[in-house]
Image 1 (cartoon, rainbow, N blue to C red):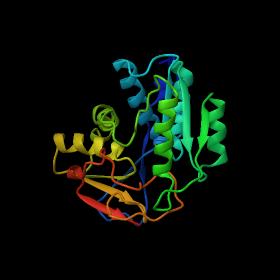
Image 2 (image 1 turned 90 degrees about the horizontal axis):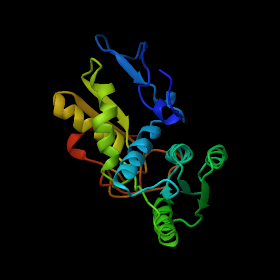
Image 3 (image 1 turned 180 degrees about the vertical axis):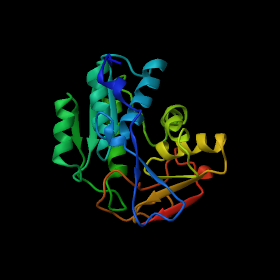
Length: 242
């Protein structure tokens, strides 16, 4: 198949079976290689879900402006889609962002806003979101996809990503949690299809997704300073924090 644009190359990523002595006898471990997406991240899936829903509903139009807060990969994905579909992108980041990602954003034509003030917990996530809200007010008609609370996030993974997972011979699924949209969208689809399959969430020490307090941590792309609306704990069987 010849794709009409790079966005059509998102998804259908390969699966490899990992062979290792640490794997218990009688068990098999499959790895879903989502770094085979165009921007080397599962966030390409989240981005296309959010953008297509917004374009369909008229919340985002060609020539319009999309503004989002990100710790890294989603910004790269949204910037690419802005170039594909012809809308402007403003990405709000913090000093933890890598210089490489900033170059990706700008190469796709996105503008970058850097917040430098930490919030009351010593992190940047709430500060970034506050800046997004200010920019939405400053840019008339701008759209904030709000990856944290927008139900279009898990809905896309429920309808699309989950099909690639449930097609495998599995008895459990393990995934990292940040906004919750990816793992919980997949988890809900799994539970609807076969409730005996376990969904296991992995989170970083310091994240407040499954705890009441937040402490700063160095890893980007996982964890959160609060529990977003897209984190549906009803579909999670186990939680591991390390």
